[in-house]
Length: 204
Image 1 (cartoon, rainbow, N blue to C red):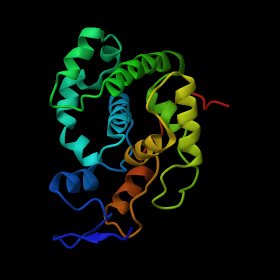
Image 2 (image 1 turned 45 degrees about the horizontal axis):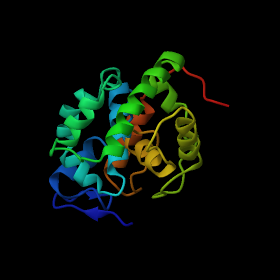
Image 3 (image 1 turned 90 degrees about the horizontal axis):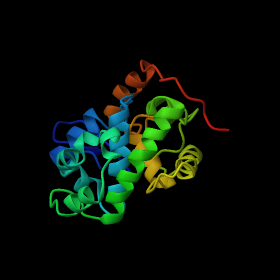
């Protein structure tokens, strides 16, 4: 889709100009490389919650999700039990979907396992960084399919290739801003100076 010109005169990706919460997210977060394990886990969980919904819905509830899930500290969430599921199902500030809630708890346990055997989550996820940019505005890629397959083999849920591709776009594993978008250059600069994490081997 073609970029849109904002009231500040800047060109942005078609989805990224309004409302203001979207503009801020687009300009300052989306596509910038992330190394923090908790943020990576959070984003993958929120992408799972987005399934069937809009990202705007999830973004508006993001702080509620963070409060409800202990800041997406996967070491804490992995220990959640049945009482926590019921607490979350009663929380009107988040998306109350039992399957997605239970998937987050399951995935937290799988994240703990992954960190124990492979090292930082960031190193594992970044090992799937595409060697070259794919076609702009795709919905999945060979890398997202490979990562989704690996995560599913390790027992993760709600991690299909489209969900994983959106995660990779947002966390800066690629720069998928429209070529004319003003934020693209900032993302390119951030990626150029980004030190890729190490500590895991890419699965064969």
